[in-house]
Image (cartoon, rainbow, N blue to C red; front, side):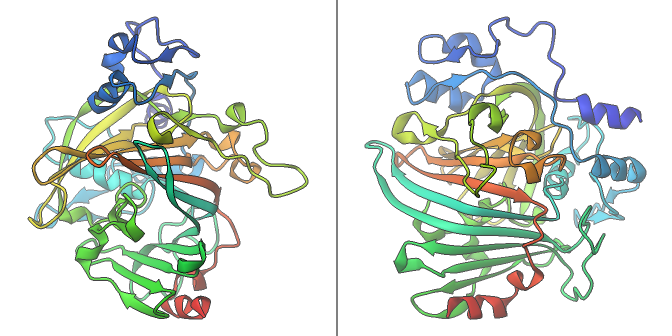
Length: 412
């Protein structure tokens, strides 16, 4: 019970010494940024100082993970370990693998946080429709290209609520989860599809396929192409779900925990029409700031774990990633990516809504709902923004959606 209370309350306790200016409704901008530098990541401070965008402080609230997930975490606490040679988890049975508070004295703290990020609960299935990607010239604000996708995910193993559970039968490849994208428009890439199988065995290479509508054929992507720009955007396949690569491909280091502002909010209080009673209408949030590249939602004070990942492969386009992981939900809220010259290249910002303040279907899921995501190329002054209507544990998501055969049949 003590562990559950710690998990529930870890990110909602603010130090008594917190600046009195951290009041809901206050605006952080170019004129007063100095007051708030202790509560923001430095690249964010730099952008606000330059006048690129502003932040409205939101009311802080609790966003506890799914109760069944917490119970499973409690039941299995202390049973998971890490193989000292391979970095693989041993004896994982569900829940959060490593619920203990990380410490810099633990040489494996970074690796444990990476595994927590991978196995945090995001639903047994999810569907994002529509899923709108805009490619934006940050200098002019011009939308150069807009693509509408359908996105789906499915957990094959460690399922929590949707039968069959905990694992799908007939999974000879030992797939942990699947990711699927289908382009609906524009016409020139309509029916282009992406399929990713993330395997439970982290030593095995993920399996990724791309169906090109123009060529009308399925192509298996080699490992190196998951770090290419996906369909000309500012996003790599490796960026999906925060980090979609192998855990073992990175050297992980825990850098500490801080109370920082993060874009976690209640969608229903920002948008009146979350979902119409009579239709499937959904009102998206908006982006603002330079080029319209920044999620326009309130930011609240959260406890964030700071995690560094350095690629082991020398030909990787990044020299390191920095993740900001919410200590209560264990999802990456923001991050910065460094190029091979160790200069900041991109900044990722993800806005999440409380599930009870989003679509009715998501209420009670205990899953932070992604609504707006931006990947900003600082060097090129370009961004890709993602607007999402996300449904968690949606029964419309079927296993056949995650097969290579389905790529071919849907592409016809």
